[in-house]
Image 1: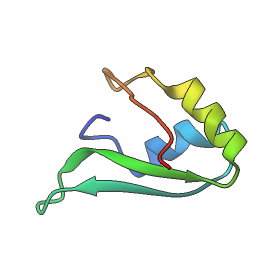
Image 2: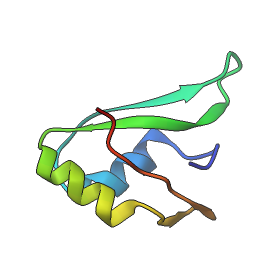
Image 3: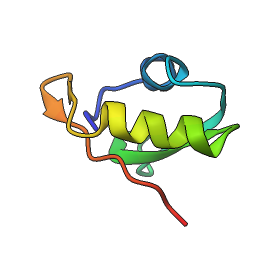
Length: 70
């Protein structure tokens, strides 16, 4: 994920597939994005649809790598 991506931008990508419960984006001690995070969705089926629909999407000139964490 691009280091300048915001939580709102990430939310906007995922909400198209279903209800987003919350998003965690990780940053360093200076608040700079580490380039990864977690999106928690209400429904597993919607989450899997988001994974299928968004994986390898060119977002802010970087390809997203999205997968389910178990």
